[in-house]
Length: 70
Image (tube, rainbow, N blue to C red; front, side, top):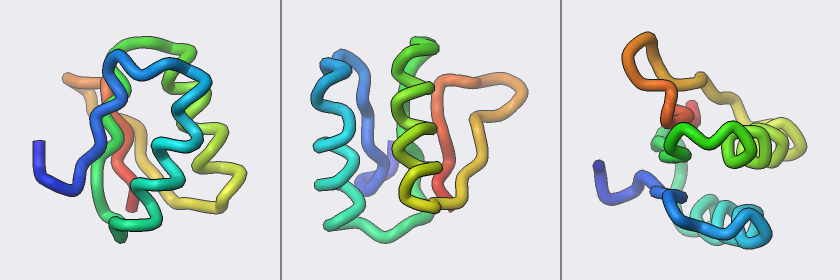
């Protein structure tokens, strides 16, 4: 994991938006948001990215546990 990536493993769902706000405030894309395999976590992160008009790409063929912010 690169220093400016953010790992949301174990983060409470209620804290996700605030964690992303803080991360985007202090880091400029591109970076990865590591979500793990939780579909609820992915939904919350994707909702935040869509709501704020960020461009992103979901994981890759071998690892769907992250979202690449472009």
